[in-house]
Length: 100
Figure 1 (cartoon, rainbow, N blue to C red):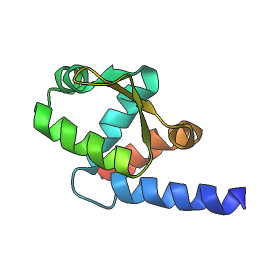
Figure 2: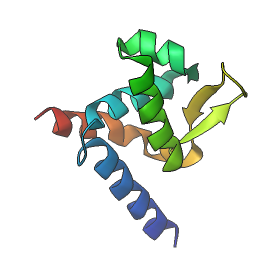
Figure 3: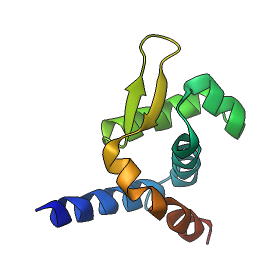
């Protein structure tokens, strides 16, 4: 059962990064959060992306259970969910596919 769940999660990650608009930015956000938790403003500054754009991608990643919240309120941060942590090694590969 765990193998089936992992396969579904990888397909979801592939779709979010490679198969849809904005995938490159989502991959960049996930790779950044792999290093340490950050809030929306920190991500926006680090990636030179508009705050609202980052917020949109974070909402999408959170909705698809790839991120968890750290803290609450305006300054809340984000970190990779345990499911995403397990797939974090896939990110550089998917990012390369996305760039082609």
